[in-house]
Image 1 (cartoon, helix red, strand yellow):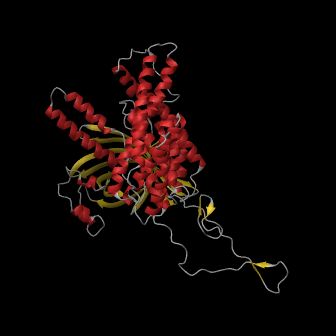
Image 2 (image 1 turned 135 degrees about the horizontal axis):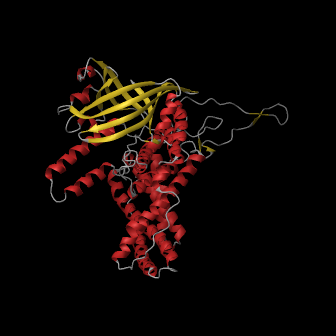
Image 3 (image 1 turned 30 degrees about the vertical axis):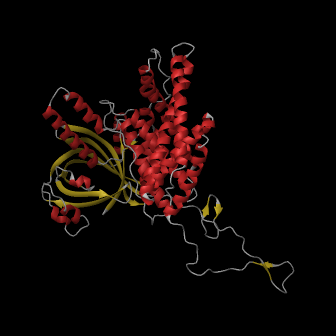
Length: 552
């Protein structure tokens, strides 16, 4: 069977209030102790399967879980057990028999959870939802992570019932979207426990440094992942798959910045999490442009919030680049120390990531991505692309002989079944649009040396949009041709990225010259470097413009 659920992290400041609200109506309290199993080589985790034995009150239940069709759906198989005995024979004849039979290693206990759960049901206009507030510990070896999450599981009705219930709780209690399941967190914690045991056994002078590196890697930034589109996908289906991946990148980096695992203990979020979160937003906005006209218009509020949040995180990113990249480069070049830092942004990244506005946007985006609407249809049933019916020719008007002067009649024509024009296959649609985008980037890039700053910035955005969109369509395009082109485009983007960072730094140091004359050193160094980069950019664009086409 499958289940549909949404999980939100409950920050420490909100836990008592959430507990009080859960208990306002009749609620059930139950103690849950679960043991999760896998082989030393993590064969189940790599197959995206989780198997556990859980003591639920006085009853033992064996559960297998796998990902479902979308981000809120899970495949779940439950079997009552007489005790803590794992029995794989219950999966004989099921869809999971083959992957379980392929396991070579010996199953053993990998991690466990100890949870106190409060259960309560709520009814919305779209259906019944069960709330489960879990508090407790996730344990692997000697390591522990806190569990503090509120799950919204659909009991009956439509999936929108989950979001209708979750939005109110999210706004009242500043809850945070966390895409990770307990099993995913537990598997990662077990890997960390194993790694730290290896480090401790090896000892050495760099022992503490290697421990710190392993711990930091546990909360490593989430970069972009590959997306595999299928030729038989409709544009809304393809957009849904892309949006789901972009959202996962955004939400996972936001969860680290909001200190879901580390609140009050360890500052895991850093500038690279901010950068990767913004990459996720930029990729999403690029996909919206790529599929413009092939799906229904993205809601204006969702678009505006994407721009606002991107800009807010951008202020943090600019400061990080200045402090961590540009200033050290200037110091190495011999610039005297300037005893002043850049003005901090209005809100830091942690506050934005855990804030109600940003988290509400993530919920809206998640719900939208589950069922991306197709473009609107004209009254005659034909699709409308970019606001214009695809078949806009007027119907013929015929004057009847002997009829009333001036009277017209519109004939009705019933088409032959199957005579409607075939919709272009997905890869052809994508290739045509990407070819046009390449043309615009190449044409403008050939004139790079003569472009002013705003035009260069706009060209940089176009180039990024093309680069991300190529990655979305990669599984449908010729890999050999795409490889060389993507390398050339990446070179362009790297150069333009450095130009943009230096332009931001230049504004900062220009504001410092009145009180810190040594800032003139920075301006001279930056100007010289910008001239070098302009020459490199022109050559990179020339190479890109004369590259072999990837779309044929």
